[in-house]
Figure (spheres, rainbow, N blue to C red):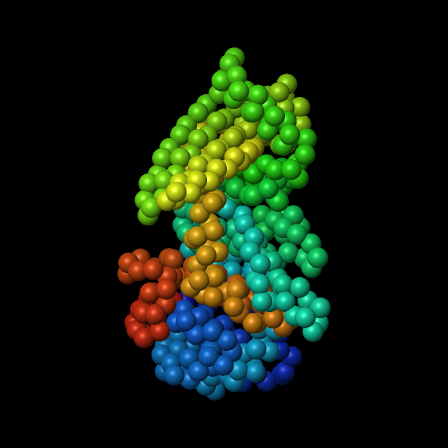
Amino acid sequence: MSNQLLIHFSTLPDPRVERTKRYPLNEIILLIICAALSGFEGWKQIKDFGEIKLEWLRKFLPYENGIPVDDTIARVMHKLDTKAFQSCFVSWMQSVVKTTDGDVVAIDGKTLRRSHDGASGKSAIHMVSAWSSANGVVLGQEKTAEKSNEITAIPELLNVLELKGCIVSIDAMGCQTAIAEQIVKHKADYILALKGNQGCLHEEVKDFFNIAQAENFKGLKVKYHEEHDKGHGRIEHRQCWVLEANQTHFPSAAKWESLKQVVMIKSQRHIKEKTSEETRFYITSLAEEPQKLLHAVRQHWQVENALHWTLDVTFREDESRIRKEAAPENYAMFRHITLNLLKLDTSRKASIKRKRLMASIDDDFRETLIRQGI
């Protein structure tokens, strides 16, 4: 049966060298996706799912030789070409999700905490993901190089994404002149968190805002917006000030491609009797009003709950002991495939956790999820 999800992964090279392969790669890929959708984790559980649901799986592919043993599944995952896998993933997502003008694409990193392998001296894997706030899905991901950081992975990830018209938000690690230039070349806009790693510009912006605020922004064209939220025993107050990135006030701004405005956001949170405050600074190529800039920043903050928290709590990613060779990175991408299929589903109103439980017992619902990839 034709399925766009399978078609996009059909170009994935099979890492096995045997002349005769009893279990085609596309059957293994589909098996892992369906098992993950149903909450089955680890090679043995994936095999168990396949044996229980073999006749159902045959609605999509032949599975003439049945289900492979767990060692075969593990061996394929260890050797699967991660770059080729990522390319298939991005191609699939670009076919089913279209980013729109103004979509905030949040670039953020997460460490797979138990993916380290002490025996081989391998450190834990750190993955940088691109999250479409408008669509609520992962658009792509890139592993950081060993003994490196997100700066090396972000440019590679940006290069494979369709970003025209989007607003790319990145935390302070990605606040680099080359990254800003790359985003603009993609015909997108940026809003980048500014911290001490950009010493001169950060100090210029911080000092100028502090002095200007003390003088009530006298003589300056400042744009201002504030908003309040209340719920779940929490009260939040956010204030946003925006100034033109005038090189007279901010000399280092000349180094940044298309830099138009600098932003200061103060947030105050009250939970019961505790109060916390935080001040953040940003630079942006947008010439928008503070309401839109504050919204874009909040969309980036939400990636923690929408993506990272879900992977940890629902998919228990931080507890995964998959750690050999390329398997941790490859299985992280399978989690993203699964999460996207669950997010794309509109047939039932339920949390990701509840949908996975439903998929584990309801063959029709699991089939509906798989067909979201068409």
